Length: 414
Image (cartoon, rainbow, N blue to C red; front, side):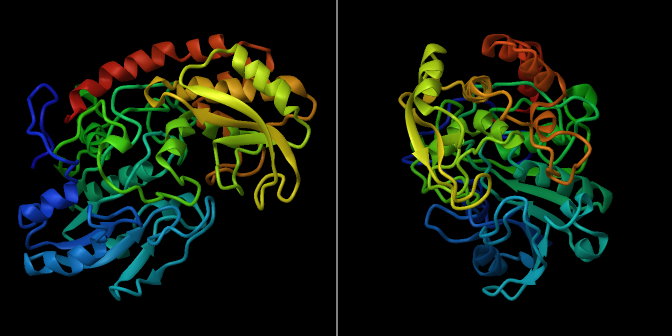
């Protein structure tokens, strides 16, 4: 199907589960890729509902339909998804297919885009990766850079659409301001954007005078069937495959748009535990006092429990941390960005002299603090340091959020 997709106000047939774009592609006898030499941008989530991997499907059944799979491209965490965040990935040969597996996450920002040599001889790029619905998560940034490369080389760009696991209704947080672009925010989108990969591709491709970002490549989105904006991942009937090593469950994805802000601090966001982003803390915190402060915020959809944990790696590795576990009561009620802001603000308030913003290089940038890249500007950091309340910090993004909500309407497919 073309980029127009299925309008959200048109009744759709009922399905026992969501039918993925990759399944729609195969049902159409690979019409969008027929006769083309293809490079596939994929990772372990690139599966159909029967757990068949896209590389195997394109190398097998699709080959008989006239698709010639030439190469694989792996985003952050790699084609097979076993590499930790911020770790460089080497080019390799995929053992199962024997095809070259090019890295789209190397030693510098230039490595995030396919090279001219890697694209030589291709007719199309196909993207099929499970996103988690947050601007910080880098897969849609990879998609946008690949779309720009496709435009440069006159390649067709095909997106096999997948659900937004945290729904398509809620939109939260501010956008990236000029000068603060990075791999965790290349485009002025809200932190929780409420869009699928296909819808994001449409916005990226559309002309700027039509609410898009003007990449202008030849785009085809193969839409899902049986998905609507009100669905969370548990409603789709699909198996959850970890999109990255620290995204173990759909519940992790629900709170990630706020809790990822802690990456810009010296607080542990729970990496090195079995519940990343659901656990957070530091060696100097009082978990019970932090729980009381968070309870007073009356945040919807969640409860808090004081706890201790010892990360096996990353921040405070092998050091006992005191903090909080976030328990989800009502998934649809969660305001994830407000949650993350509250956790950061109240943890800092306990011991501002021990709290610190991250100063190490973050996603290839060493001249701007990580928190500014995540928040979209320096304003959030300055406001936290001045003692601003959780309410005022979040309210400062309301105008940007409203503008993005209006802008995205023309790109919605469901």
